[in-house]
Length: 277
Image 1 (cartoon, rainbow, N blue to C red):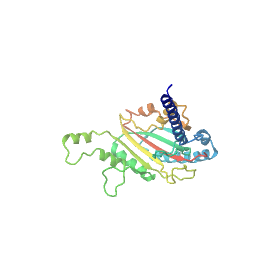
Image 2: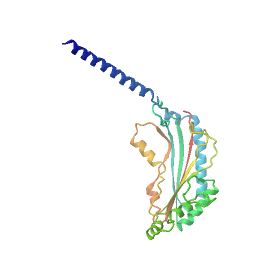
Image 3: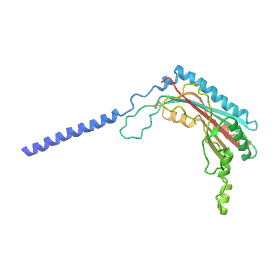
């Protein structure tokens, strides 16, 4: 073998070693950016601090949804879905090359109450707005059109959806009149924080309420956490969720409200709390 050929082979081997070393360094670097061991969701969910917080949160969520139910004598109760789930997730970080980390395990209790009613759709939206306002629920959704000083409301959204643009043509008038009678708003709900708050999410985490009202034949899209639960069953090896309590949404029962009733209300209240892990 000629000397020049040996040099080429030697250079090739050396280049291969350098490339392999570089690839290994890169792989090690990105591995070092990983979040490390995942927090033990089951252990955190079953800890004494979590159980104490869960009892306090459950009492408040049940009480507040129960108050709303009692203030709707014109509605027929259909049932309540319950989701009390503890989860862990990676902390969001959009910067390239930043080390990943796990957020603390956080639990959330959600009650979703379903009620049916008959009669004038908008009139009942006005009544429901009054009930929510007296209970301290304040909408966080702002419709594009709102009079000065007017609070966002279910009836206000209904009016906006059914109002044609200025100087409308006949098709726009018809489209506004035919818009589905479906209204959904988000709310900030007052809750006494006599429980361990979630870690790493800030001291003023909103207590999220959602109200959705749908006229037949449409059903509310609020599913009481059914989608989350189905995802866990689909991927059982992913141990990022643990359900402390689960009372599923009964779509058949809610759908059975029609045609005896004309519309369905779904009221959901979610409160997050911290854990011992």
